[in-house]
Length: 344
Image 1 (tube, rainbow, N blue to C red):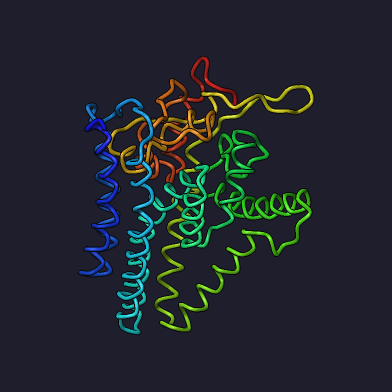
Image 2 (cartoon, rainbow, N blue to C red):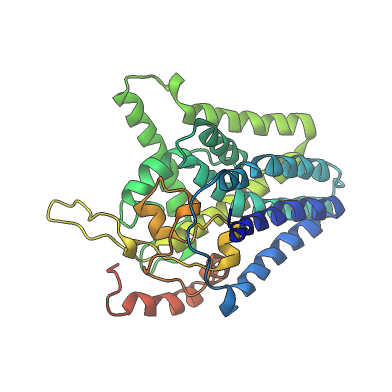
């Protein structure tokens, strides 16, 4: 294995560091994760770190990097519950629990969902089960239906709730994608069941949704309100990160349609890309997004950096830009207006 592939072990620093910080203090967990993301955003500005090594194939090492995150995240969530229930029943205690949830949610969102996304594209049953567990832990299991059967079919079209339209701010996009993705997942699942002539008893989406509800009931009953508040806070932060990345990935890009309304095949100009070394090491090459959509079954170790539309910085930096619409439009509009830029 080339030594450059060891860079994906860098991802483990985030859950391990967050756990150590949470052990010390709820506020330390929040500060560590926010500081980690800020550091990655700063490193994206270093010229020597703006390109990742090329693809070297996909090995057991790459899969292990993903699967190891499952026990790491599980341990972090258990620790988070233990720390949360130890907080005093005061307003200060509530604030500490929320801070803890936001910190842990930075891990479950930036890496847990990203790795679940990669595992869900695998043909291995164990990998897909791990993906369902990771998505269920952030109360967003419907992603496992909508992303693979919805988003990958409709990305960069107005029919896709996870594609941001040109001129649409993040804060207008969020309610549209949250409601649209949820509704789409259930429509797609109902269609699948009808096609296979099966009832809802055979639906993993329904089973996962019931399991999510039972998890929340069990947390509240066994450990009290602070445990429930922590879990909801981390899930909300994780989903916010997911949908902000969705906003960034296809913002303003649109596949042209033929006379019948059928969109053109997905091409390298229909997703925004970046290739920053540290960010790609942390989130399994997710920034090589055009290649991912063009070859959905290709594992992350084989993804290539394609010459499609390029973001002004990596995902970490773009999270900040997207949160301030004026900044986002200022840097993205010139990129959409360049000669040869995709229509949107």
